[in-house]
Length: 435
Image (tube, rainbow, N blue to C red; front, side, top):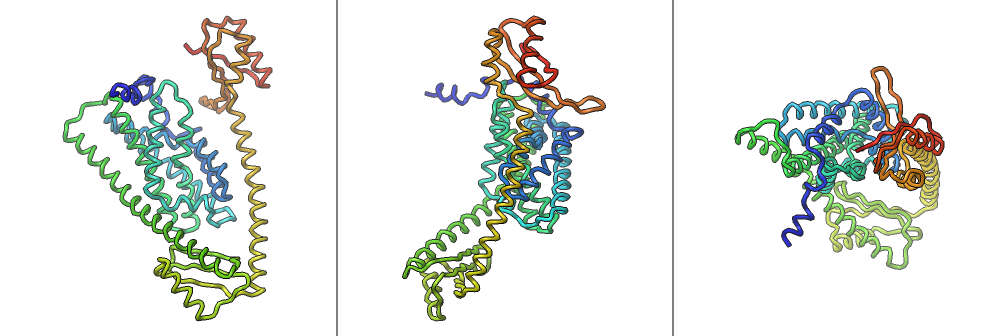
């Protein structure tokens, strides 16, 4: 049984060469040239997504964001005691953070839409659950990085840990001078950075990556104390916010139960409801279609609220009138029109993003099936469009990586390249055999 569990949890199986993995990590920590441009564009896309409350656009921005690189680099540096790499990683992470804040601030400053949408508000109140997401997402990410076959987890990690949206939310808060949003979003970003780094550090230690130099026990103890302190600094506020969130959820449950009981009496029709769990005192605001309340009835309802566990809560019931009903009607119509406009904008953005993604990705499974008919010796392929950078320009190149039971001769290679170009309507596809 012990051997069974050991084999299941054994991470060295399928592990890539440690030096090659380390070089891969080092290559992805830098922010300059094309990487900086990609980051800036991703920030603008994410800001637009938050501004129009589009989950799909925000996800697209997270997929193309390169922010994970320096965070993983810092975790690797701590794990192998490479303080030069740690310094570079932190420097590049700070650079990326400042650039992200600058671009998001600029976008929201010039944007005519300043209202905080739900996608944006969800990044202003971090709690212990965000810690769990960051830590386990970081574990998945670094395990994938250390594999020979990287697989598909890395895009999922980018979405789950959500580094980009908190930075855009912080930029929005700077542009609108909403400081509680700013510190909440920045704290969420810090949670993600710290716990992705901690997860990376633990996996690097578990896989026994060789250290750059041997440190005495005193310095190793100091590193452990610093890491433990960082965990506590981030964990304690997160736990407090989770406790506050739990209290708010319990209040909402009690409030909704109370409203259902009150509405069930005499078949009253509720036309308006607003629950505020953050005010002092907390408030429950209601309006009914055909019911007005006297002072004595309002006092009775307040007493019922206390009996239902709603302490320190004020019950407000709007008076019924035709004017109020017209206001409700106008509000509903305005909201419907607003949502229609937002949906049109979102659909266009999603279509543009899908077109961009389709430009860079291909259905490799289907292509392999068709290629095998013409070239049965080919075992595996990977076709993708890459952004290439030379000393004086940036250009795109479509490359087919393939493994074959025996090397293709020049005639076969030319035939395969021409077949792909005709099928995909592309020019100058390069072939590269992988041993």
